[in-house]
Amino acid sequence: MSISNIFPVKIYKIKLPNYKEVLAALESRLNNYRNNFDKSQSILNEHNEHNQFYNIKHNLTFDKGVNYPELEDTKKFIAEHAQLYWNELGYSNKLMPTVHNVLINLSYQDSFLMDHIHAPWPIIASIYLKFKDGHGQLMFTSPIDTLLMTQPISDHFSNHYHYNDIEEGDVIIFPGYLRHRFNQNIIEDERICISYYLGSEIKEL
Amino acid sequence: MSVIEIFPVKVYKVKLPNYRAVLKSLEPRLEYFRQNFAKRTTTSTGEDSKKTFNNIIHNFAFDNGAVEDYPELTEVVSFIEEHSKIFWKELQYHDRLTPQVKHLQLGMSYENGYLMDHVHVPWPMTASLYLKKPASSGDLVFTNPNDMVMMSQPIGDNYADHYYYNEIEEGDLVIFPGYIRHRFNQNKTTDERLCLAFNIGCKEIDARRPWGTI
Image 1 (cartoon, helix red, strand yellow):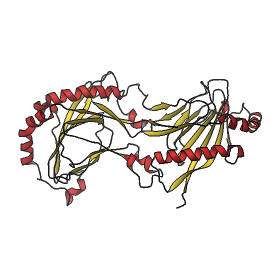
Image 2: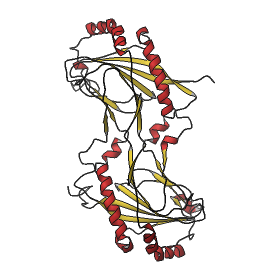
Image 3: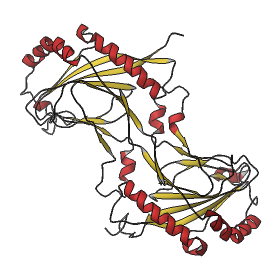
Image 4: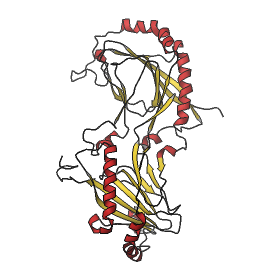
């Protein structure tokens, strides 16, 4: 008797060796955001609810950093490993993945980010510069979860979700179509994650 | 660096020890079907082709509907139910429901016969038993349930991750979720391929509830 696991979704994981230096290099810029970010802000919709996609009421901020010189080396690191991942996924060898956009995310207590995808970007890479237990897990959802819910599963949803074991400095690279969320940050501590959006360019032949 | 594989679809495979004896016990029935059904109809051209699901020129499948009508398969059904319980558990399906063979289909395929993409839902599981499987008589190919999303990716012309070709030998029993799209590729031999498909539901099924009285 044997059980085969077919059609898996592949995720790439690697440690950024100098992540502490990257964080230190960003510190003055991050301080600027911390000082100017109004943590009491609340965006309400017509139902008087705060944003249901991300809990901005409880402190979550973004910044675009694609042109930050202190992130240039990380962009090269990401592009190098994204190429290996690209090959692993069997994506076209006439194209090469390139970083098009960079998003810096600072998350505070009670913040979360609901299910979303990054398509049509083919690949996303996330670096966890500050991360500890309680910060909220990065959780992937099976792309066929609706189909699985039609099966006689009772209350077993463990095959529907994948909880990533993350440590500081980890880089997770995953397909842009893969639905994911950040669970709630339940501690009084800042989480910092930088996301790289990778598109592709035609290779010179 | 590591590549982690998540959200796989699980497929169960086991060998039926006495498959030759099972084939022998079915032989009078098979001969009847050969004489009465094989090559009788064609749906590849003409008006009937519009409703063609499978090319039954040399490939026909009949559905007897009830396992009770096949007393010679009683032990096979028990074997399948025993293994489907293990697979059921592996899939983390409901522990208060018991998988049970409800229905069978017998497929005999001849030269050029094939069966196009299909699923067996709402049956949660299907078991395919290969009693006659000559080499090159057509692979059982699963299609990735995420294939439409994957086709939106920059894959070029590489579809390798979209399909899974099962390596099958005579006597193999393959159990898979009923929602997995699959096909039988063309039988490129002049020999007969014989496959029995058992659709598996739940013993406790209740018309008021989709999965039974739980």
